[in-house]
Image 1: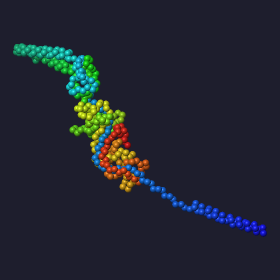
Image 2: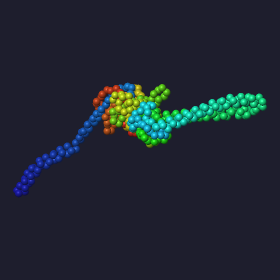
Image 3: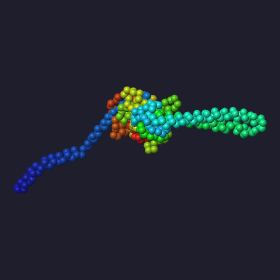
Image 4: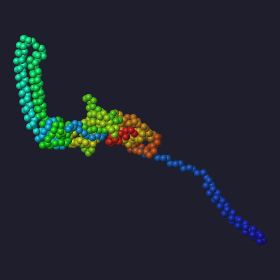
Length: 417
């Protein structure tokens, strides 16, 4: 009986455990099915097309302006020297640095007393020489009659005839008179040279003497600069020379605008010459620009004088490029490329050769057509054919032209990009 009771207890225990085991196995099977079931892969989101700023342009005649730097210099400068010696007895009130003189105006006067005395002495010498010539001519008449009588009686050689007729005496008298007259001309010239005048319209750059000073011939008196014209000597990259017109016969050189460092002084001039040698250091070409009336002596309102030694910017007219499109310099990428949004909205990277470029703009005559969308903004990793989202289209004629605004030293480096 005890054995049966023990079996009965074991049965009840087993009956209670079996459901628990079944539940645990079911849960384990469920987790196993979930863990091993196939999963659908997530599709990556489609990349968004980068938004870029674009612009469209039209073809037009583009003005090219070559910007160069230069220094104002005198077109005509002389060291005024005395032609005679003596004491400076008077000086013009304008005989100071910056003083102005018209052509022929008196600057200095040298004491004339010695030269007037010399002139009177030489006039007396001329009178004496004229007297001696007349006396000798009288001797000639007497000697001629005597020679005629002698020749009839005894004849004579040609040499004897010249001596008898006093030809050497006559020649000496004539020569003495010519020498005296030459000395008279020199004395008059020296007297005139005691008055020092301006050889042209000039401004005094500096002076060397004052009234009361003793000067010798060839002593420096002043440095004069012609006020009719100044020059600007400007440096220009050799590859820019093709845009500059040099004067040829009746054809003038390129027009130029000269701008002082203050930005207010603007004067007009023209290219007059190309210097034959390059700069020693920069290996750049040099041109001369002529500026008429640089000190504004005509009194034109609102025009400031242009001073010698000024470092100026010169904008030289380089002509026009017909049928060109002027794009911003920033839209001209490295290696001569531009970015264009194609009709299908993708990036088209093009290599172009500009007709002109500077730091402000680039003029294209090929590689970009009217109405095409040019990318103005930057792309971190541009790839041919990548999708783009164009924004900010603004139609313009591109008539800004090509105007440099930097010095020629940096522009020379840019020209070889």
